[in-house]
Image: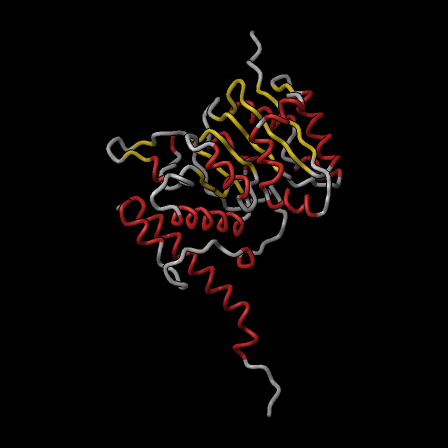
Length: 295
């Protein structure tokens, strides 16, 4: 008897991954199209899958990608020329008014570098009256979060639960003001960002003097920047730059201990759970957006 493995066995893992991701891509396209052509058909369409009527969450192993991405590279991103030209209806169809052709709400909370969407999923039910957007630069990770949101909405067809969360592939270091108006956001999250350990890479960190001015532009007075990391050097870097910026003031640890977002942020993300499993430290710093100084 021949001991040569069958061709199908050799190709099976890659083939399964290819088929699964193609199925999910087709499903995403169908849901997006039908959501605006006929909203009543969306639940029926989202029930189509190869495993029957049961709606399953996406599987991370089919969305493998490098942990980090160069924010200065040309990622062939699509972005609006201004916030007014952004079409939010495809991300939050439940909040699109067919009669007026406008959204009934604006995005108020942004999770920058949302990863696999753990924070989005936990913040959604907590802030049901606000639209929450995750921004992620990695292609496959963004698609995972999108598929996760589609599945969660299908699992709750008669509820507004998870209708208020969305994800977009974008580079916040370059195009944030293209998406949001001045003073539009009330909360911005930076959860376990890339530490960029090498000194020559520090310019790629998500918190810098220049970027903080952009965050201050889109954040309303009294709005909050939330930061958390397990890297002490990065924590000290973010604290130093936020302390030095005239439009931000650090909130007390007593405030952090009582804030529901801090509690969610500590434990909802995949990185946060990993740090907990490894019994590592989590460093939190929250800052309030101050009023603009009088001229």
